[in-house]
Image (cartoon, rainbow, N blue to C red; front, side):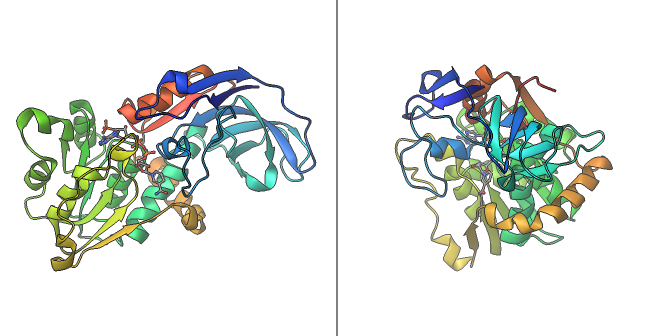
Length: 339
Ligand code: NDP
């Protein structure tokens, strides 16, 4: 098996030398385990936090050990009842080409005609469920709401905006980091408005001003993937009684100093806002409903999803670094070529 290990804890943005790729021999299978050949790995923003040596909601990666994360593999050997050779398995032993997986901690998934298996790592997996639960449960979205989502061209954000549209949002606004992404949101994903937050420093327009221009009458729901200045802008634009689901704050993951924004937090009082942080983990009770519903939207063509695919285990660190730099549209996927 070839595996990616954490070689050094990054300071600021991760760099290639923070990772090592090594060949290892897998131990013999134990009862209840299966061996899988991974087809796809996922790199996700939360992994940046796991590279730091601090307690968080997921424990830190250990130095010089193989990193873990979501992966989709095919079972090549089985010592687990009910998980036959050939089954597709969604598991948490990513960042390696092959893995011994405890079957009770993994999920067998069916191949869906017309949908790539990698969708289980994106729109039909953890990021998709994050969008679904965060919008519908945490933000308490209802038809007629005007919704703003940051990180809108990414895996979570692109699902949030489309689910809001399909469930009757009055208006959906997104922000992203390039003109191409903004055009894609409006032309292909059905956003009513979108802006490039990187234009700000060029035009002198703050994110708050860009949001005001896109939503002159304010917003009811904010889905936060970015934090910092975006959260400040959303607080300024939220109407009285508005809700925000605080999903992620990618603008601060590489920061070595705390962000001064949001500087207008006191507005939550007068506007009686609800800002609620959430993790996807406790929402897996929704998983079957979510797959049915979102799978249906995808099959009917009402919902679209994008993937940026990088090939080979040796490219996984670069894919992760690229994700944090915004090189992806939709889900960033590492394909291992074992299909
Ligand atoms: P994305 O597919 O959205 O990829 C990350 C994107 O973040 C990049 O493409 C880039 O897009 C954007 N980005 C990077 N730096 C900045 C910055 N400084 N300011 C604004 N945008 C930036 O990732 P995911 O969809 O997987 O995750 C989105 C968010 O959701 C993350 O914050 C993540 O931590 C969070 N999350 C939370 C979960 C939970 O349980 N609470 C579960 C899953 C994800 P651009 O070109 O637009 O800058």
